[in-house]
Structure formats: C-alpha cells, structure tokens
Length: 258
Image (cartoon, rainbow, N blue to C red; front, side, top):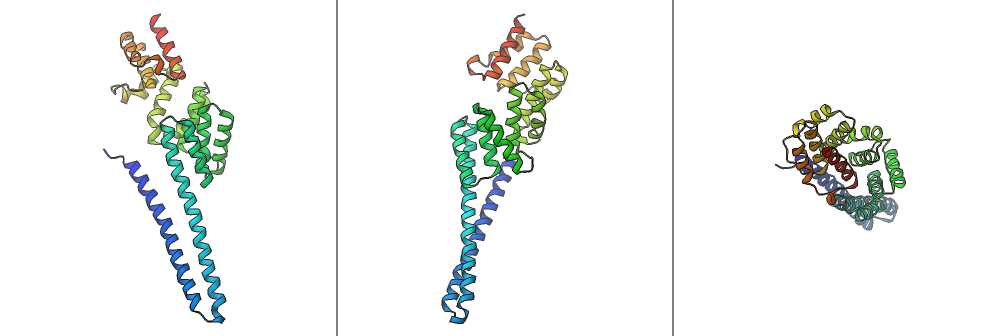
C-alpha cells in the first residue's frame, strides 16, 4: 500500500521548492529586461531605470542566496535523517551541523540536540533542544519530543517523559513506539490489565522487536504461560539487545526461574 503521508510530504516539498525557484526565475528575467531597458534609455531617464534594474537585481540575488541556503539545508537534513535512522549518530550529527550552516533553522538545532542526547552528551543536547523550542515559541517537533521523551524514560524519569511521548504519539511515525513505551510503563507500575488494553490490537502480530518481545513475554508470564513467555524472549539473544532492554530481559528471565 502506498505511503500517502510520505507522498503528500514529498509533493508539498517539491511544490514549495519549485515555487521558490520559479519566483527567482521571474525576478531574474525582470532584472535582465530592466537592464536592457536601461541600456536604451536617454540620459534623463537613465538614473531611474538604473535604480529599478539595480533593485530587481538585488532582489533576485537575495532570493537566490536564501533559496540556495534553504535548499542545501534541507538536503543535508534529509541525508542526516537517513544516517540517523541507520544508527550512524556521528555522521548524522555532522550532516545536521552542515544543514544548520546553510540554514540555521530550529529543526537543525533540534536534530543536533537529539544526536548529542543519544550520544551521551545530554547537557548540550538538552540545551540545543530547548533553544530549538524557544525559537518556535516553546514547541518541539515530533522527532524531538519522541527522543527527548525516550531519553527521560531510559533514565527512569517517567513523569517527564509522558507529556513529550504523548505529543509525539499523535504523529503516525511514532505512534507504535509510543504505545509500546506506555505499555512498558504500565507493566512496571504493576498495571498489567492497562498494558494489555494498550497492546490488545497488536497481540496477534509477529514479534519482531525487543521492546515488543518484553511486553508480550510479560503479559504471557502474568497469565501463567511461562513457556510461551520464555520462547518469545529467546528470539532475541542477549548480545543483540541495548542496555535498556538487556536489563529488563534479565529481570523477566529471573522471574521465570523463580
């Protein structure tokens, strides 16, 4: 099935970029026509014609400068996101930094902040995220909100993570991950029924991710189906788990042995 959301986003981007460079083309054509007119005018009208042609040229140059900067910023941001989702944080940070050099947008700052946050430089990362939000009147992007919320969740600061994850969960790209995190919070608060309610639409789905495996195994164990819970966890070797999930898997496996 086609990704309609992604298609709409790409279409909007193409239209905006096309409109921007069409305006640049019009202004450049106008400047050329005005300079040609200036070359044919009499001495009396030359100053006025020259001023008009110069103004049009300056406007075309300004539009070109800002258009190129913005386009290059978006291009570096795009490749930065590709590197980020591939797990190459240092490369992603470099590309986001290049994006900010060409177009110092709040998004570029926030993207750098997320990279620093996940790389262990939490102080500088949170500073950049706060700066990005301040430039948008205290609003973050779903990308920023999700990973800042995940950072607080990983650090055990559930109360701080919930508002950020709730906002991020309204974005389809993050909804599934947010549901799983909320289910984990419910399980760790001994609210098994609430966790099962959150996961109910997905209980029959194939278990393909470690966080999903932890939730399903926890629910199976709560139902007394220990062998099924163990089989789910066994699909994910300890060496393939991140520290956050490795610790949780070990605690769940210890409960199974008791």
